[in-house]
Amino acid sequence: MSATFCSLRQLSITYGHGRSNAAALEHINLDIATGERLAIIGESGSGKSTLARALAGLLPNGATVAGEIVWPALGHRPRPGRDFGFVFQDPGASLNPVLTIGEQIAEGARHHLGLSWKQASSKAEELLDRVGIPQPGKAMRAYPHQLSGGQRQRVAIAAAIAAKPALLIADEVTSALDVVVQAQIVRLLDELVREDGMTLLFITHDIALASGFVDRIAVFHDAKLVEEGPVRSVLSAPQSRHTAALIASHRDLATRPLIAEASS
Ligand SMILES: Nc1ncnc2c1ncn2[C@@H]1O[C@H](COP(=O)(O)OP(=O)(O)OP(=O)(O)O)[C@@H](O)[C@H]1O
Ligand code: NI
Image 1 (cartoon, rainbow, N blue to C red):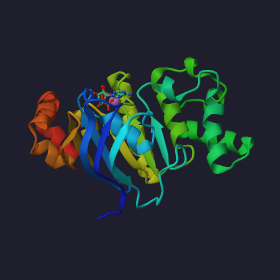
Image 2 (cartoon, protein in one colour):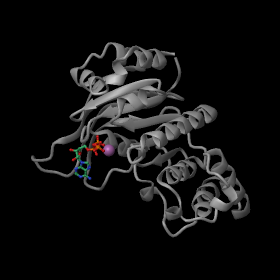
Image 3 (cartoon, rainbow, N blue to C red):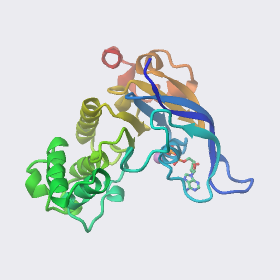
């Protein structure tokens, strides 16, 4: 039994005030273990990104929070960049268009690890190599628009992990990419979190994609956590009809080989 990294207790979140505002999350109880790879699955509007924002302390002003989030492993609220990295669907949202790739990655390393610019730059180049960017030295001087979508996402991942955070939150990071690149990004995330022992929160509406590499799945529907468990048991014996529907929408998941793969 590994240590609890983070614990949500009766967490409820509503955006804004007034009777017309439905809760974006309702009474969520969920423990995240240190070093686990947890997928947050659910259809659009089910509250996945709200959960990510709540963990990251990035809820907009006016959001109402009830219940609590505790961080036993850290002992304090996680600091952005330092304790957790955040990667979004659109790498444009995490990358600054007027900074070179090298500058944006080096900035995180410099700021959080107290490195000089020179040290941070060589660290950035190392990271680019690590996330599979070809010719990292050359890429250091490029701007985000000069890269493909998949490469931009690799850069965003490099920036997010520059300070070696304990937690990586990936919110629909593959949704804007074609399937081949999706698989490559998932493989990269899998490698990185294994190597660094990071805890990963992999948010997606794609249960098939997540099932290939995470340890555990939490399914959200309409602001509620409807099911959670190890990938194998959730896939082979879903407890909630919402989970069953998500699985049924992926015919390939219902076939034997993928379930066998997910359980290995
Ligand atoms: N800033 C906001 N202000 C008001 N309501 C919001 C805001 N952000 C999200 N919501 C609402 O909260 C609910 C949950 O949204 P959330 O973005 O968490 O869902 P999601 O599961 O991430 O969806 P998607 O898959 O489309 O990203 C939705 O009803 C959404 O409309
Ligand atoms: Ni979302």
